Image (tube, rainbow, N blue to C red; front, side, top):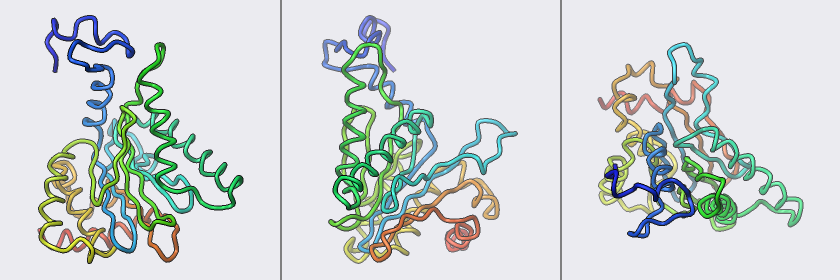
Length: 252
């Protein structure tokens, strides 16, 4: 990625900028995310859907023990790309922050406040010696008083709100796919059912998932949804995932 003379001495510590103004350790953390299994999210007028692929580190690993979609609070969930151990630490912190907000203000935390809290921790780990950046990005989706929300968090501590987003391996191709599809129809008319279909079609841009037989895909995919009426984030069960994937398989 970088020539030996270019990065020599500037990637040894997180607190050292290169002459070009780069923090190589942060860029390395971003590369860890880019090599992680794909996760996608789409925001609709009536909710948000998150979906991700599960990749087993070994043939003997039980896929049911791998989690790609996780609950933070009743009204918000997240999808992971990158180092799961790092994600676990951030998600535990986010869960505590969500409960503190409920106890302090007697209301669910806003999605943006939650994301800012996560990214504050990420940013802190880019400016102190003795720590390293979190090698994980999170897709955070939920519904609050401002309606459906979808954010990504970056290893640098940056965050963005999205209509449709992808993180992990092949994420660039998926974002191009979303851009093309969302031009074809008015985004304001995108409902949760269409958003789910769009998210799964984006997920199929992963070569590994697309190469599987339709009946095998459900065990390699996780989906989570939330709608504006119930405001409860629900990871889908295996039979529900199979039903969601059927229309995609029939188009192939």
